[in-house]
Length: 460
Image (cartoon, rainbow, N blue to C red; front, side, top):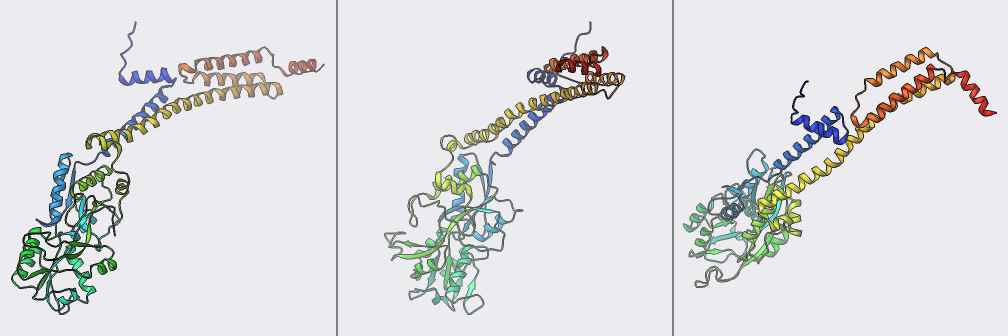
């Protein structure tokens, strides 16, 4: 007696599907392949949709507010097991160019509101405004300067190329009739060189902002003799004319109460700083970055109120859908109660595998139904052939020998059919009906004469 070979794993699965769903070998393989493809697609998407563990931010020069804030972001993100690589830059304009260049590896960056550049920004999104960036204009003069037009014909340091300071300075000076190439010397000195030149009387005024100037330089200039911080008396007018500018006030004595620095309230103007990202930023990381921004920028300071930032203020680059949703309803449900990576894992399970199950269940139900329909269609095909034979017998349009030959052909074709055990009853009933039709033809029960006589008797 031959002992059957043991079944391997696939054969066992095939037998299980065949017995449970009544499928043949081909249908079983099709079903298993379908489930396998769905499972592989779900696993791939589960892995692919995971947030990256490393982000790259384009910040600003060493010591600038951009760089300091980037370092704070890195420290907080590290608590969530996300590494933030901080890249130094010249400031807002360079950050924006890096983000717009898909060949440059960077994910986010601080960008001054209102920056205009030739770079394509259609693939960039804004996460909102993070903080105010006031413009500080320091000048050396024995008299108080109350308008920027008074700088005409003087030596003015406006910052190097690539900084938001230079762009804003040129915009404001242009509104006051001061343009490059005229009698006013516009120097592209960086913050350190500009401050040193002002202290040494080599320039008459300098424009500084936090994107490119260390805070220590501004404090030094605040305390230096014969150097004054420009009070923007026309601040409200500038804010009305330039949509991305805001007005701020530096209160009297707020920097040093003992020395009364500044000696009077100082009106300031400046844009907000936006956190700009590429459009492929993972939604979970968008929420996490905004949570970090809330921790860093949400506290009150001299120039902002409690909870004022981050805010859904965006200018040239549109606010992302994820950021808009965050500002309206906060972070997602799971992220409120679970650590970041646990919430991300649970969220991906819900997003990936629940739809997988919802597709799999009706898919598994559909395959046996389609398979039964195909088998039934094959069986009904031969019933139609038997009906045609009986109709030919009744009409007397064909001889008995040809009818018998056609029955033999039908029987041979039926015998070649591969039918699973669940269709055995229908299969054997078909064979019985073939035999039934054969017997009626062979014993002449279906001869036209008998049929006609039986019809006459019925009519009488």
